Image (cartoon, rainbow, N blue to C red):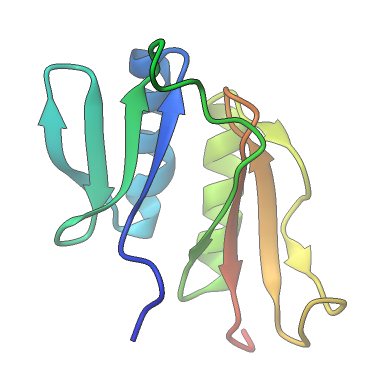
Length: 126
């Protein structure tokens, strides 16, 4: 059984973040599954698992959150990283093995527009 069902980040600029995540998550198989009036969007494969929402007084911007997306191949990690950097994300760790975590832990890290550390990782041997 999975531990988490979904997560939401609140963002400073909804349109910028929506566009960023739509493009970055597409190679991972995530598409917009639900959107409400330009204030919240949920991405997923068959149902929304990753949400972004416009911040307001009651819901401050999410910062310094670390989210890791599990993928099936190292090639997808590379694509995730390249796409995120192209879309304005900041390098926080280029694609590569991280044997200090696990023997086959292949990952890349990018800081999004709000300061969150997003990661794509693959645990397969190749």
